[in-house]
Length: 224
Image (cartoon, rainbow, N blue to C red; front, side, top):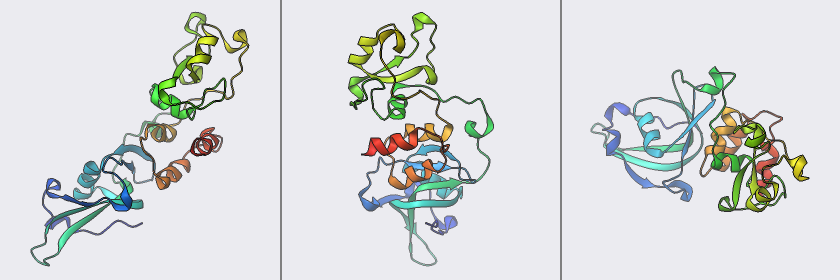
């Protein structure tokens, strides 16, 4: 979807914009995916930040559907009111500090929210899906045996399996992992950070995942 051509010179401060409607029933808490001008995913922003980027002529083009409609002041020359449709994906101009593009050794920060999403809320031992409150972070090789708190040494585990495994390796506990832990790429990490990822945003991000990424299959299973 092309961006709307608005006369920014006749628009007041971005603070003057008022919400008219949340298109397609999306809540105002819905985040917008921001990319660089080459289309590489950068971060999630709220509709206010997206409106500021439009206002400052920083939006090069947009993708996806309109999710929020905002209105500004009335144009003194035409008598028409300024309308801004905020799309689900906006590409911004200029160079960006995307660490996934500039650093080959980039490792995203590890936390339970993104870990559980990486593993599709599945216990990597019993293969059952659980709500986040019933999951925990398990270290495949325990700290007591030299294991580290890193993406490639942690998996999602239900509390029962984690307690059963205790301070042992899976081999020592006679438990088998259903998948090998991996470090997400920057695009994968952006997806994992998303609180409410729309279908068009998900498809856009999937296109930037490595073909061998386990997330392709896990996302399908997660959505089932």
